[in-house]
Length: 178
Image (cartoon, rainbow, N blue to C red):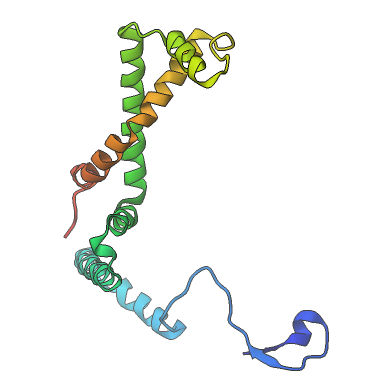
């Protein structure tokens, strides 16, 4: 379909351009092919659909691996992390935040049970920075603040553990079907 500039701007067009429909979903199938595929799938039994979906999952995994090889991302930490996020998106986030909150709770428990004086730590930080936070912070909020600081300091240890354990944890709850 050719769309003239006049229909967009209201001015006399000097050139016409091909218009590309902007849509959120792109399909390589034509409408006729899509309809025939819907009819074909509607005629399959539940077992046949399951087998076909397993085969499609295998093929997608193979194609994603080939794409990673061709782009070189299969061999980088960033590429592996992207693949992990692609394959285990919400499950990865749920596992990451579970581990984050667990380490925060353990850190807070260690501060409270270990009789660590959060206000003394804040006062020591005040000496180095020249601020006067220790006189303005509630002791309970100071303990929570120290917990958050220590919990974030654990991030270089926590993230690799989460990355290494995401796949086994997710597959323990949701086993692969192929």
